Image (cartoon, rainbow, N blue to C red; front, side, top):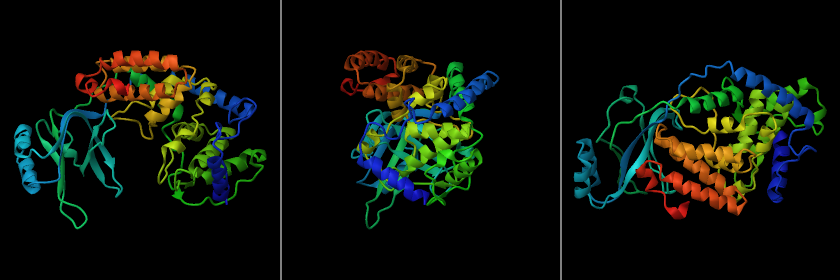
Length: 415
């Protein structure tokens, strides 16, 4: 079975902690010279296509506001719930319930999403700058509440007392209404470029893909198969999504590489680029994933740089968070993208834009703090210690240009 082959390969990978995960060709890449030439021609045509795209499209920031969080696990919790229903003021609440755990001046993000029960919900969560526990509250989605004013109001999640847990309440108090602002044209164009190259009209896996074992074996000589046979094998791989059972189970990642290899050799660009970006972002489902396992997984950004892709625009275009993305828009992992950029030939260009974004008062707070996280993650993986120190000095200056309530939460020792 394909799954057996994948698991065997994954076991070998997990036992040999080498610098290189997957076999490379003489060109130093995981794709051969002929395959890279084919992909390069596709990129050239897509770069031309981008010039005909609507570059005036406007993207809007995620809905966001400032607020406080409250956690109450003792005292008169039922009465606290009633007080919130009556919209008690924040100051009066704190006086009445001094045992409440409070965090102030938080960036709160609101999103419409689907929960594990396939129900539409509104999720409100805090963005923690200091790696503290981030609280989130879910409520059933109601369209009529989308634009309802929330300034100086509460939203809470109440838990009744049970045999295994006590009564508790968690809440957010909003200092202003949620707002979404347009992103500047220079940022929107990067998003448009990423959408153009990635092709948001399709997905990596087929719509009816199931979780489970692969239906057939991958022939050892699969590279010698005809294009039609490779396309059939690729279709089979796209029909099943493998989920890792633990940190050591690399089968989803190995499946991702096979998807990338087969789609590259059959010139299936949409599947190829999504597959390669998933490898770079380590975007695979796993039951658990320890840090030591993540550290040994490579990013393979150099393959993209060799293809005449505008890699800074591609990666930064997938890093913005927005309210109106295209269907199937690809969102990058900020931590993994930071690591990839640390290996990029355009690292200085990346870091320069991230510093600029931190200080851009026309950019929303959420994307500004994302640029901070991106920069920190990138600098962490830079091997040249002198360069890291210089970057830290630049970062300390840029942090002071962030909104004060965010800048005040960033401790100098964390930079």
